[in-house]
Length: 411
Ligand SMILES: Cc1cc2nc3c(=O)[nH]c(=O)nc-3n(C[C@H](O)[C@H](O)[C@H](O)COP(=O)(O)OP(=O)(O)OC[C@H]3O[C@@H](n4cnc5c(N)ncnc54)[C@H](O)[C@@H]3O)c2cc1C
Image (cartoon, rainbow, N blue to C red):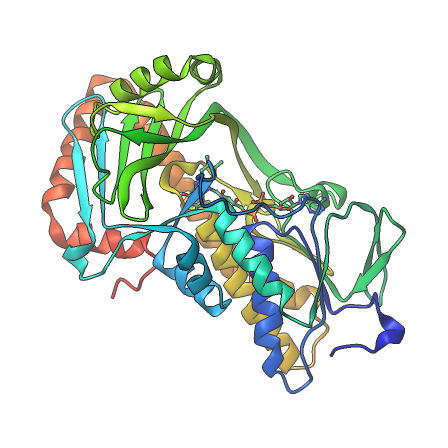
C-alpha cells in the first residue's frame, strides 16, 4: 500500500497526537502491516509539540502504572527493552487503606506467582522510546511540531491541512489528541462528562524509608493519595505522588513551601514511608471524567483519552488506551486482509463495539470507588471497612482481582 513519490501526501492512515496512545498506535500499525501481502500501510503521524525527553537526572512528574497486558503491547511495538533500559520501576505489592477506619487490603504479586504487579513508567520514557522506534520505520512520516488548520471529508477519503500549507490525505483519520481533543470537538462528537471539582497534584518525593517496591494508596473523604514507588538504579527512596484534592485545597497545597508541603504529605500518608524529606516541582492537573457517546464516524475514530478520560485513582487511563490500540490495530489488519476501505463505518464500528463496554465498565467502577470513599455516613464507613478487611482475608477472590487488574486471564 505504500504510494509512490507522486502521491507523497497521500497516506492510508493519519494518526493525530503522538502521546503514549497515538505513538503506540502508529508504531504497532506500521510494524504489523510490514507483513501484509498488499504491502505496508503508509502512515502519517501529526503531533503539535516536540516529544518530551527522558532526563536520567530527574523524574518526569507524569508517570503511569502500566499493567502486564500493556507491557506486552509495548513489547509488540518493539519498545519495552528500550523503556526498561532507560528507567522503569516494577512494583511487587500494593497497600490500600481507608483513612476513616481500619479497612486495609494488601496485594502481593507472589500470591499469584508473578514477578510484579506492574511497572511505574515515566510518560517521557515511554513517549521517547516510541518516537525513537518510529524514526526507524520507513512507512511512518512524522509531522512535528505541526498545527492542523482544516479538515475535509469526501467519498474518497479524509484530508487535513497543516499550518505550513501541507495537505495530508488518507482513508482513515485516527484522533489520539488527548482529553481535550480538537478533532472530537470539530466533528461534534457528543460526550457525557462531569467535572470532579478536583485537581491531582503530581510530583516526585524523597522519603525517609524505602518504598519497598509497593504502591501505597490511602483513601480519604477528600480524595485518594497514591505514592507510587520509583527505582533509581536500586535507590528505593523516591516515589511519584498523585494526590487528588478539591480544587481550593489543591491550590493551597501547591502554594505551600516545600517544607510545609512535605510535613502535610507526611501526615496525609500516615508516615507510611517515614517523613517525606524532599519534593520536586509540583503540578496540579484538573480532573474531569469524560466519555464520547460514539468513538467513530465514517473515516474517523477516537482513541485513548480523546474517547474516554477517567479519574486516575486506579491508574487505568492509559491502560484502557493501550487496549484500544490493540483492538483497533486488529480490526484494521482484518480490514486490510479482506480488501475493505479502512475508513468504512462498518470496520470502525467493530472497534467501538469491542472497546466501549470495557471502557464504560472501568469508568463506572472508578466512579463507584470515588463515591464510596467520599461517603461520610457512619454505616457506609463501617461497611466499607468491614468489606475491605474481609476481602483481604479471602485469597481466591483477591487473587482474581489482582489478575484482572493486571489485564491477565482470570481463568
Ligand atoms: C494525575 C494523573 C495520573 C495518571 N496515572 C495513570 C496511571 O497510573 N496509569 C494509567 O494507565 N493512566 C494514568 N493516567 C491517565 C493517562 O495519563 C492518560 O490516559 C494518557 O496520558 C492518555 O494518553 P493519550 O495519548 O490518549 O493522550 P495524551 O497523553 O494527552 O496525548 C495527546 C497528544 O496529542 C497531542 N495533541 C493534542 N492536540 C493536538 C492537535 N490538535 N494536533 C496534534 N497533536 C495534538 C498532544 O500534544 C499530546 O502529545 C493518569 C492521568 C493523570 C491526570
